[in-house]
Amino acid sequence: MKLIFDEATRACLGAVDGPWHGSGIVVEVAALPDDLSILSLSDDGEIVADETVALARAKTSRIAEIKRQAQANITALAWRIERAQERDRLGLPGETLEAVLIEREAIRRASNRCEAEIEAALDVQAVQAVQFAVTEADRATPARLTRLQFLSRFTEAEMTAILAAADQSPALKAALLKWQTADGIVLTDAQTIAGVQALAIAGLIAAGRVDEILRIDPPAA
Image (tube, rainbow, N blue to C red; front, side):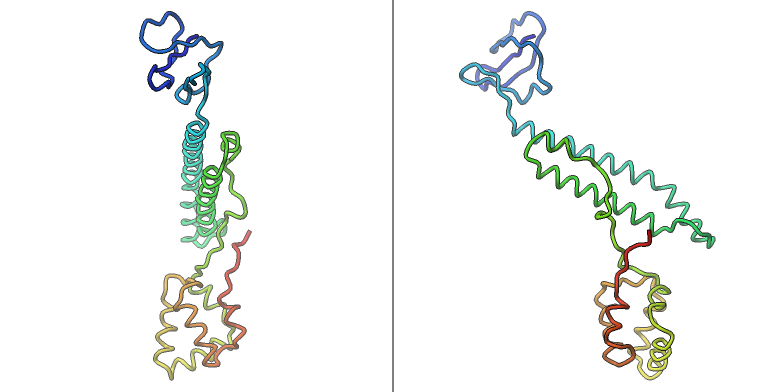
């Protein structure tokens, strides 16, 4: 087996198994390397590999594979999303839509984490060692509640006081109406935080209750 190197650039042009009648420097080898394109010929006639090029190509290839794995996993969740939506519409027990969406987001986060690990790798072996897998650290903690979940965080006494005060305060009544009609309540939203804090300032809830009401709970197992 012969490797052919460009006379000017010393880069490997390819390999032949037999006579070579073209131009270039011919070097006999016992076996072919996996990637000829990273090879070059030193001034001393030694075949050398550009590890920088090899590492960059390994990273590109591995990241592409990670993305394919993540996309395949996300696609596989489609039927679970449909099932959860149908059960929710029918009021049947089972896996919730939120649980499936958390899983889908975890896959995206795992993919991003793996890609960052690959980019930080210092050699090809470290690149190949990165394996795609979703961990608990990849699972998001939702900050969005349904309006019923949010309003249920207030005690009956608190809601009674808030409703009574709303009859005397148009601003409070408007804020309460938003909560009652919203598609969902985002606990980290500035308006949500300000609204709960305002209830404490008005004495409608205890000051210590602000953090309790705005607490972001981890998803149920």
